[in-house]
Length: 225
Length: 225
Image (cartoon, rainbow over all chains, first blue to last red; front, side):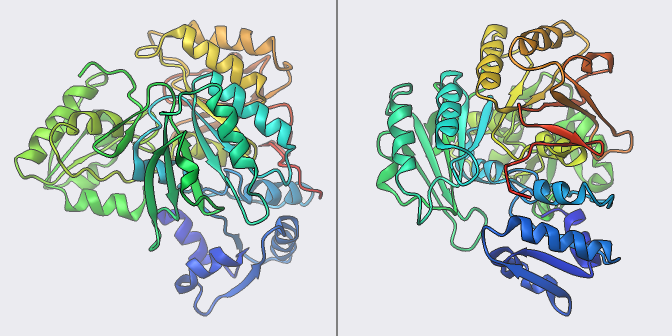
């Protein structure tokens, strides 16, 4: 979190967010009003935040990582668009770069960030994007690679990628980056599904230049060393 | 900058970086040794940092935005790989998400981050990546869109994109995000080159769903409002 985001929370009258994220900042919420929402209530959360702000309150909506990457910035702005409210978005560290920093330097070349959640995007669209991004030799970062109700898709992604990229392509698996129970692992396209992959996991699939040196995943930009 | 990155700089014996970035943190460097390098000396900078660290010093290499996105994490790890040194990478706010937060919420759907610098990547590779990413309907973020010695390329990118995307596709132009001389502008694919675009600029080209509401660029994720 940046000092600017922290200052927003400290100045807020009301903090709204997904319950898991509110728990992570419980220490900041002492003596402050907060409203916890379960998953899949994004629009209700945004509406509540906008209604409270329209009543004159200083409201902060928190979001995981960077609110602008598959986060709450969109729903809040969409709901607020009709209200004329002043909405400020504070960027944060998104999962792609948090995970990359733990793995090494996999994002030194062009990269695609793709969510595997098909709740709001058709699965065929997601698969087409993955195929074209791999053909473009982009490094691939997968958000939301799997969940309790969605386990089949990541296997399909792996099978499709194996028609384009070698099985030895490095795959980084980072779970709960920068939290107490963080796990960081480097595998490859052939074998990465031997390891657990869930909603708290970010996957980074290298491009044709990505290599593993001393256990760290590096996509060289092409400097002459 | 995160508090963790700040703490690293405060603890350092020696801070190394591109001269422009060192100037931006001059207040943190009072009474501390620092080494400023000009542009295009990435490998020399990395080698100096590794040599100093091997001599037992606590060295920080600074980088703009997030060091893991087209930044110094790669060169440092590549040079350090032969040394057995312990290198820690602290993530930061990369230009894509800094710029997005100023524009609205353009990155709510899948996105490609592409550097237009052809110093280390062949121009034909960059153009192929852009073409495939646009066909995949990814939101496009262009780093290093233009420079004093590289002015033709962004026109080629625009011409190519106009064969795939409508001229009305929103294009966000953010220069020096979060600095005193920040400028933020929303244009479209037809007209964005009427505005100045340089190395300090980040461009965000929407996908087919991106729209401008109340002056803010939003790529709706598809929630039912």
